[in-house]
Amino acid sequence: MIIKTKSIRDAKKDTDGVRLLVARYPSRVKRTHYDLWYPALAPSQYLLQKWKNREITWEDFESEYRREMSRSDKAQAHLETLREISKSITNPNPSCHRHILKTIIEGR
Image (cartoon, rainbow, N blue to C red):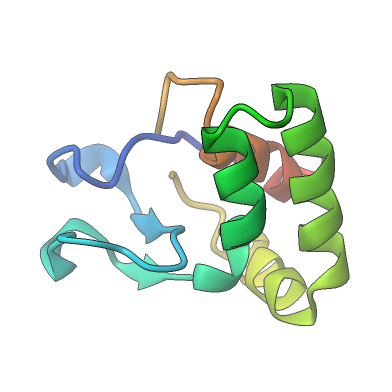
């Protein structure tokens, strides 16, 4: 399975495969930029604010995000759907929750 990550604000390309929006509260994201929206796969607002405010390290963010994903039935159902789809999602930025989500989907 090939999974790529990139910002949802990046222009959609024919080679992108299925575009997944992973955000609790997307702001100003055009519906044409994504195919699926799974807010349950986004980090909690509380966790995201801790990271943005530099209150936790990236390692702590990753650990807590993984914990949130493992405790959420809805997130687990979405992950299973994504595993079944086996399509692409895209981002070279390793300090983004999309990168962690990619490894979770891949089972790592």
